[in-house]
Image 1 (cartoon, rainbow, N blue to C red):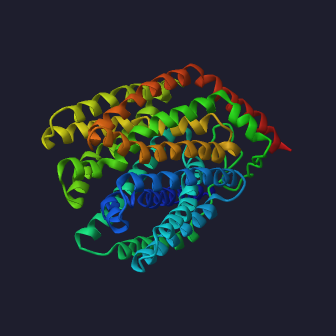
Image 2: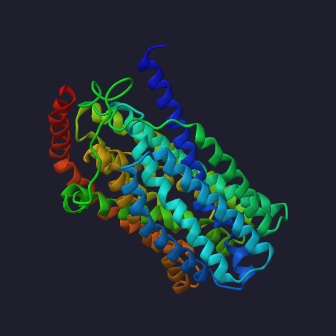
Image 3: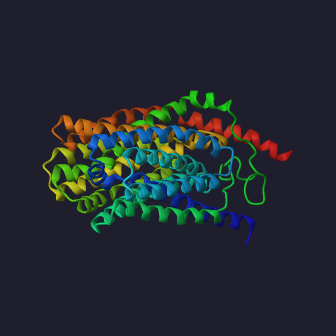
Length: 439
């Protein structure tokens, strides 16, 4: 087998393991969602109290994201993911101990902070590595599968504890099971090969890769100021905030909405959530593929597709929440809502990496992950407060989140106006650097 074929096979294995790491991280992110009612009863706290805890934990996770992303631009990313997964697995096991021994709420809170350190690393590190495993014209589809992996992880993370609750297992045993699964995957990461940085960039593909030179540039602290001031990156930050908040609010409080407002049990509510959230993996897969197809025709194609997707999302969400609850009508509307609410995500991730140099992609991913976590933290905190103002009606809170799609469309339009300039800067810089490989 030729070196190029071996490299392609290795990249495929690497991509699959990166997707699995995202599934595991997504499972941890959603692990407590079906357990909100049980945990609040266990500690005798309100939904808002628990939302505040998870919101603060998410802010902590956001702060921890930056050093992970910076490290991804300097060191081997698979090793960093292994460390992150080990931290997540350990925190789950320790949380199980916390519940079994009935330790104070403060101990559980501290363990959530520990888990946040691990979860902070998966997103930016894995994102930085994924782009080095797929060619330019397939990146949208690859990040579509990244989105699918997050959704699959979220589904698994909710299904496992919901099933444990239906089997009347304790909270401690439920967390132990999650920790054992995480530990097994951590060991599997020892057998994954590091993707070569920059090997899939068009300007570098003839110089970096199998049996070829390494891309030697690494991030420097002095680069951070320029990265933060870059107009394209400023637009990406706003896009991430407006993109994440509505879907995070719905995801985090959807089961609670069904239980509080419609009297469903955890397991049934989780099944209805799985049904309606089928739109998310489909939206990620199709959204990513559509951005690739549009990009082949025109370099502004990705962002143009993103604009269309963002316009449709709030329309279906408002309709689903405004109409009288009938699951035969509600479920299709929410499937369409979830399809469109995530469909621009793969394009957003792809654009964020393509307009930045290879040695900056982990850091920009971390910056965007930071603001994604801020949006998630706000989504933990505000919906129960809004629902409380409407006599506990979470549907009203969800309808108000729909307005975030309108500024998102505006940001996507601004990105479209300057995307070609940003792509030219990266391509020209990398072409200039290819001269280094001839010396």
